[in-house]
Length: 130
Image 1 (cartoon, rainbow, N blue to C red):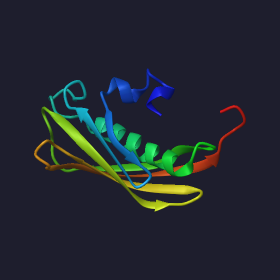
Image 2: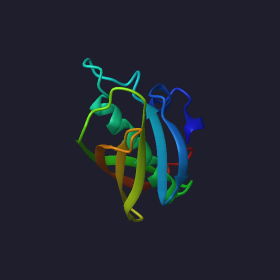
Image 3: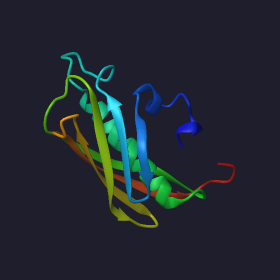
């Protein structure tokens, strides 16, 4: 999936996927370059990490003849990060033929909870030529 678009947001944010299966995905992302004006990890950056993992997991579950699109995402931010790398771990809540829902937990380098997120993706048949 990463090779599909080398100019994707995934690359610009510095997200590195370290584990990927239909049951669990893990990725890291640097805080530096992904901060808001106060120097804290931007909440939107945590959501990008979460959506990346949930969408990838849904695509792995769906298979190569189907596509997935996010339909709902939410996030609760528990604490701030100012430096280092954060890690997102995605686990499925429900993997169906039409909808997939994932929980993503984002932690800092000391394994402190930064953000919890939930995403739901719609699974569709890929259009011809996709």
